[in-house]
Length: 291
Image (cartoon, rainbow, N blue to C red; front, side, top):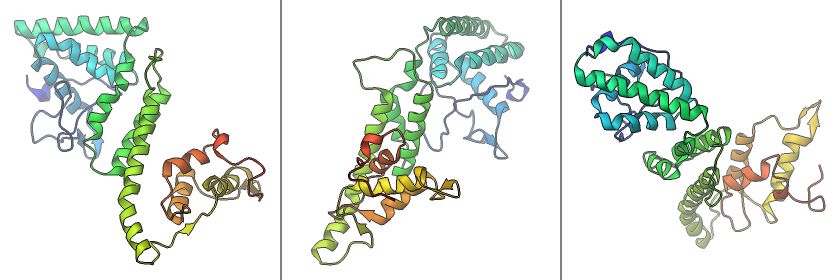
């Protein structure tokens, strides 16, 4: 196959693996040679042409027995697998003339049959979309992110994706995917806090302040609730009293206050207290700071 003769199809979704950052799995789509952009971008724009070339190359480099799991694997990563399958069918049809030997023709027919079978499963709500939200697979991908910030960003995105596209059938005996993400997020944040405790502890025993943060002597949620009121309830000329966003406010609170023991505040805890639907995490009227 002359890769430059490939006619592309207008894929809206295109899961790929950048080999400079991640170790690809058996069914991941990667660039064909080292001269190609590993993140599939050309002039800072995702290249559909390159994606189509590499997708076809991957499809026809697999054995016939692996075509089905390959297509299923791609679909599990997609928001709209039905549309992606339609584009794959079109891509194969546009490039039939590039695959002329007997084995290639057999692979074409097998791929088209599998595309139709999975489309039928999707239409009948039998396609296992839950496989897309496999937490073990997520944990494996998480290891590729080097910094806590990158790990947290990845987890937030995966959690939001799940909440926006929940599978219709969820095993009631297992912990939901989004809750597992929350547990992992809190674990990373706690580990980061532990790393900060050593200098805090050393400074304490030396009789020096560890930082210039203000100590909250009472319950943390009373202070956080005061900020919540200024962000959501109290108005100035019809606008929120504080001109800021929730993420920036979380950063401000955790950067400037510590608990009664001088320990950093948990971003996850503050985020929960600031969530409009988590009223149970904020103080009752008797304990509120009345602004």
